Amino acid sequence: RKEVEQDPGPFNVPEGATVAFNCTYSNSASQSFFWYRQDCRKEPKLLMSVYSSGNEDGRFTAQLNRASQYISLLIRDSKLSDSATYLCVVPRGPSGSARQLTFGSGTQLTVLP
Amino acid sequence: EAGVAQSPRYKIIEKRQSVAFWCNPISGHATLYWYQQILGQGPKLLIQFQNNGVVDDSQLPKDRFSAERLKGVDSTLKIQPAKLEDSAVYLCASSLQGAGGYTFGSGTRLTVV
Image 1 (spheres, each protein chain N blue to C red):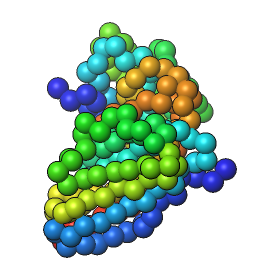
Image 2: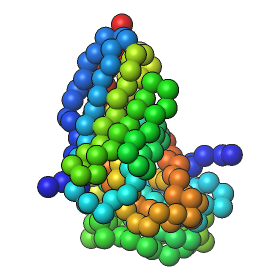
Image 3: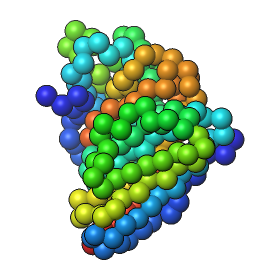
Image 4: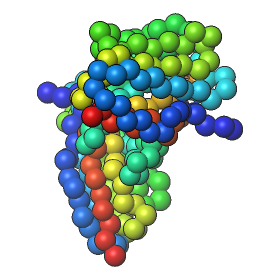
């Protein structure tokens, strides 16, 4: 089993739609998680951190289910500017230290006008 | 605050040639990482430095890849000789020890023909 697995996508949705991405992780000891966003030909950038059951930031909601080792990202009211690849990330190492990041393969989202 | 600087942005070489990439992290960031991102995949860690020492190079193909961070500031990643499968984006990232937050550079896109 891969350390981090994501929906392969691609997801093509109309503006205003709600879309959800799923991610599973193999290390049950993992405590925190990230969603990164990567625009075409750009570097990954942190979108959200997930430390407990979930986190909400405007139109974006991340949820964590530790029992199922499952993380999700929900985007409401999709905008054209949300078109990007979304990467599920599991850090390795103690919290507060400089940790290594294990990335999923990413899910590509295209929001259509 | 200046970001992580990488050069060159693009490089095309023939297989069996050598190539070097340079990274200058954010000032004061003790930890520096090199990641390899193959098209359609998430970034994969190659090597992690703490100041001028190697923390983890277990995923660095040492028969052809080498990296150094001699003065604990900027870093160079070298491939010699290159193979077709080395075609990827090479991302440098730095973080402040204890904070865990990453900043990625814009990457070097390598094409081996």
